[in-house]
Image 1 (tube, rainbow, N blue to C red):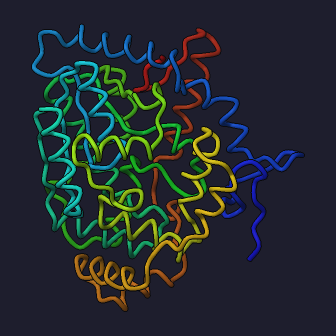
Image 2 (cartoon, helix red, strand yellow; image 1 turned 90 degrees about the vertical axis):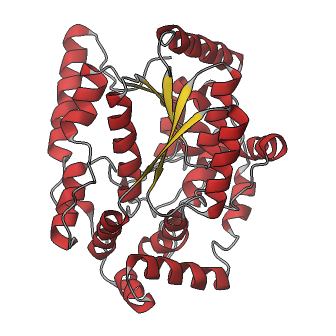
Image 3 (cartoon, rainbow, N blue to C red; image 1 turned 135 degrees about the vertical axis):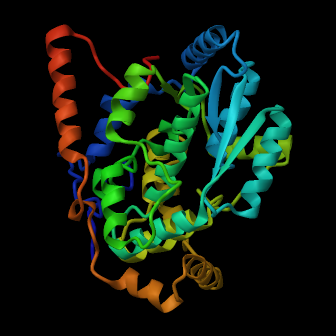
Length: 381
């Protein structure tokens, strides 16, 4: 099938919601210029903003054991946030959620970051039987975002833990330089606990006793408005070049690269590089490469050449598929059958879309009549 591609980035009509202007430039590029750039400061201005922000955190946390919390996966983004926190003298509690898919390299890199920064690390090990049952349910549902189980777990557990220990500021590795392009047609909000529970109710086989999702009320009201929890994205206030950061981490802390984005998770590696492409035709390299084009880290020609490279070595794919199938209690044939079955959609199950639309209307109403902009979690910089 032929796809129409953006003339500036490499996003194409595999995104069902994409549209192009008269010059063939897509809505993702237009959005980047109109809004994302106002949140991205890879320059001296950003350095000043970051210093002021971190000074605020340090001042508010003077009499506390920790002034912020940082979720560390062992990936490049969160590892560099830890380095920045050390550079500016923050005292984060480093939090890691083990959902059963850590690669050996992830464990090694986390240890190296902690050793270099001299931070305290708390590791929350999830109940594997429950995670397994949830992920089996998602596989059977056939929805696109199979990473919801891990993504939801990481955020909900970290937020619950931060709240319990009265830590207000959360440092996050999300960044505009490599993640500004993110089509809504390819995913659904991983924090939608209503959707998660509905999928598990239909396809799950055991009761979830230890898994504690985050509710709509907690996520949008309790934590950001009542508890004043604030999520910060420090990488948007520095020049963030993944290749240069990787070289820095390898040289200074003995970091070992994964060979591909999200290689720290055995499941995410398989999901993004095979399941998602084979079943839905969604190649997530297009998102990251397009983001890097827009942030001037690579050229469009370089991105096109990168996209030509195979996602998987044939032998590696056979090994990873067998590993994922066995760990989830499927045969390889069963896993293949779920991939080839008709695609599911999150909207086939109960979800919080109607609540979210109502929330946005309320925010719009308040902004129109009071000029106060309500932006949950994210602090204006």
